[in-house]
Image (cartoon, rainbow, N blue to C red; front, side, top):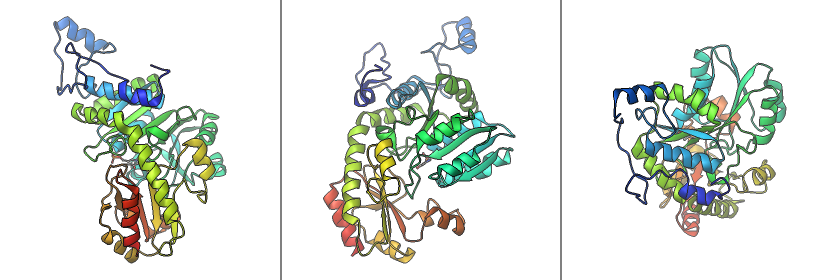
Length: 389
Ligand SMILES: *Cc1c(COP(=O)(O)O)cnc(C)c1O
């Protein structure tokens, strides 16, 4: 299996068949498992074997299939599936950190990620230093001999700054720090983060992995030692595990993720290119456009610009006018969905940031984030053009 290409892994990796040899993965909708004898129960609690389960909070066959499939796809040794993307971000960080530890993080983060680093970790005595993630000098200055972990979104939400996984990992590894990458915008299709140096990759499966807006989910990927030795004990006792039904939906999502994400990224590139220079827009931000500050890095790191672009309409009033005029693209706050979605980050996903921080991060009042879906790109462009007009 290790020499299969990603598309093959996305369809076949991790399959566990029951005695019925079903084609579609079975949903083991059970909280627990029966032991033949009291001795068997004792033995399993002492040490569960590879395909032995105890309680769904610890693990479940359908969830294990999803963990193995996405780990294979990402080139990670192992994974732990979580109830949401935020349970994954929190689990990856909190399971490995303790009071007195030092973390360096990029500043351009999704609001809830920022909350964990700024409000939760610091409450328990973890020191966090924030840097401009695109500035390697700032990383080099902030990472210290006693830094335990670095954290960043490889492509930031919603301003689409791209961070150099290889270069930041090299700086972190020089002091033995663990590199944790929130890789949502890169998607498992365009990511090569583990090969590029990341130790731990975290996804919100709610986004492209489900891709159809049905369920929350997340995954923490890393070495077997990190996942089973550090993450699993924390997650299984604190309760953020994925449900078997969700794992089944995510397995089905992975089967089509390559086709969906490549089509969405092609449409995003087409739409961003067509909107460039539009007189009603102050700015079009898309990592696949040659005027993006990290265009060369994006090509080398991901090979494509991804499925999300951002446009700046100038003012909040103007952004709201455009949003309210859209006929196909819906106003919501998910991304990576089959349905194209427009979001006004300043008043929704990033509302809790103080104005000064919004300004520093480029979350301007006129900014709209566009997650491009699976509709015909010409219809989407037509919708945007009529709304802008
Ligand atoms: C959505 C998102 C999350 C959180 O995921 P949920 O599944 O909503 O908990 C974390 N990081 C990034 C970059 C996201 O876009």
